[in-house]
Structure formats: C-alpha cells, structure tokens
View: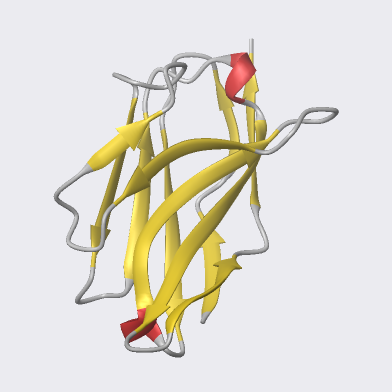
Length: 121
C-alpha cells in the first residue's frame, strides 16, 4: 500500500489547513488509519485515528475540538481538517495505515512520506 500526503503548508496562528492522504495498491487490506506528527527534536506522536468504517475516532488531547479526522473509502482517501492552528502544531504530519489480510492476519503498517505544517505566531 502506498500513501501520499498533501495539503501541508505555512499558515498563521488561528488559521486552517486540510491534509489529505491518498492510498493506492492493495487498499482492501487497509484497516484503521491515523495521522501522526513529529516536531523537531521530539518523538512521533499520534494525532488522530479512525476505524475502517469511520465510525470511531480518537484524538490526542492537544488537538481535540480543533482537528477532525475523516475518510472516504470510495476514494481511498483520509483527511485531517485542522482549525484554530497553533504554533505548537508545527510538525511533519504522517499518514499511517494498519494492514490486515484475512486469514493471514496483520501486516506491517504503511506510512506516507510526510507533509510539513508550519504555523507562525
């Protein structure tokens, strides 16, 4: 499975961005998906996750109420709507997909190459 992120950029504090993650190749194996981010000098952290059908979402406390994760399985695309952005949201954002092929089971996660989000104060 290949994942390609887009939509990152430079925005002022209080602004909005919408990230997209397009999946291709073996997309039927994709189970849950998520967005992670990594700021300079910090560990990669989970920002938000969504189940295969989109019915259950989870958010990091730092983004809850400001970010919204969604997915369109017909388009093999996941989104992250980011509102009221803060300078501390500055990071490289990565798309992640959990892969599962019955009856073989789980396969190693697939990752995108990342997209830079920079929020100026």
